[in-house]
Image (tube, rainbow, N blue to C red; front, side, top):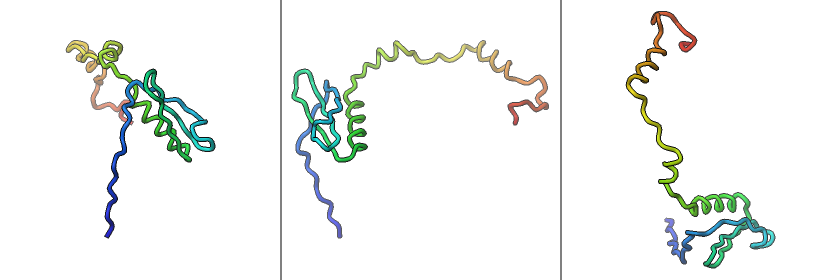
Length: 107
């Protein structure tokens, strides 16, 4: 019978406002990065595996990006549906004159 070992969190870091910086000197001989803040202390992370550090850096960068969706929507508004007359014109243009005749779209 295998008993799962309980994992307890030692703490957490509120990463709001932090920037991710690659840092080869975190632990010489290992891959590493640090997160820095204008007013809070820096935190350092490292691993023997480069892929682990890269994935952790990407995840941390995604988590620290500030998002303002109102700006994104203003810059890239959702497409509007076509008007009924524009939709009818598109459908008419795509209709075949002779529906029994094959076209290049049928291949």
